[in-house]
Length: 405
Length: 73
Image 1 (cartoon, chains in turn orange, purple):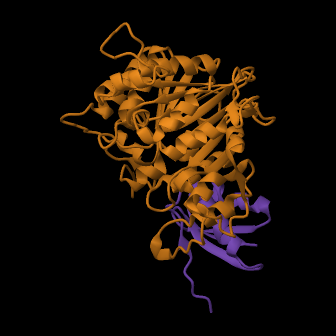
Image 2 (spheres, chains in turn orange, yellow):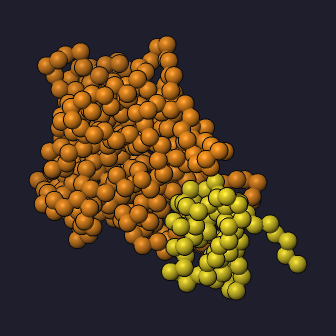
Image 3 (cartoon, helix red, strand yellow):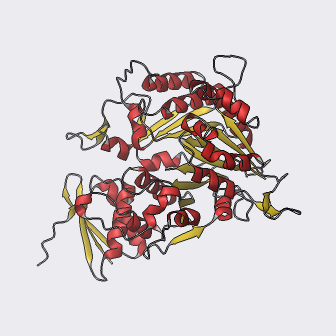
């Protein structure tokens, strides 16, 4: 039996809801011409929505997709009541979708918050976990994701769990010292306070930032006297480390959340963290175009490093991410970027690393995979469901962590 | 005479160096060689891993923490 979840803090598009729908098993229903969803199945899925993801609940273009998901007894939607109130959508969502579980208001001490609800659920499903982690890829103030990260990790500490923070890509900006926002919640101070509270409770919080990302952004510089690199203008609570050290923290059966993420726990998972069978599979969803942002390179780098570190890893090109595989990319030295297609081809022989492309994303865009991308396997809805651990499959007796890039 | 200057990869992380080398080695003709500068950590963590994959890998110290690495198919 598996129990899965998705957490979305950013926009949930029509396409995303469509493929989530397609991940669940279907069966023929007598008396109906089409398919209907399996009911009473052993697998369950919780969809947690906050931030911009909440807008999808009131977007008329997505109404049919939501109705279809709500008709599925396996799927439960939990919406962040605080963020709905902030956006003036709480009443509308409660009226339109009584099926949605709108969590309580933070102003009420009696009610459980969205993040507490999420921590409680995951703690129940990921049996025996003593820590929870957040992979932060967004910078503070421009994005509200660091606020969600703090709320989540604070809830984890309140539940007696050890908090871990992995700052990656623009997420390393949270390590900058002297943050002084005039209006917003001070994220740097929040991290220091969280570290102090967790440390005071006898826990050992682990807050790390990727050295490559930190170097690129000026937080990690070479000392000409020693030849080594040192942090510059960083708060003490966060240590800059190579990506492989951050990925060492992925060993073990604990959930890792991110701005958009998912996870599947498996009941009866051997309680032997560090063994091959107990370690969750890492699934990296590449959802952005290849070169305009750092998302694709960041996702692929993490996937390659994880596989090289012994973590079984799957990369799925989906949504806008399929553009990475189309055409024949011509990258000159002046472009100063990795050729993503060469990167995929060159690394496809790494043990434990497998590349996939979601064919409906290609078809909807009228695209085909370039001839050079022979190592990428095609998957459809049920195949994707199996890879994410949602659909039962002989190969999915392992927990899965899914992170969207 | 080939006057191509060896690339300086000392700023790359071990993961990115691994990716870069795999890409460059894939393009390398049989019998060809690849030369570049790497740090001690890169030599130990990344370059030496290619020996077990059938490559001939040699390195010579050229500066304090800089090694001229030669890889042959």
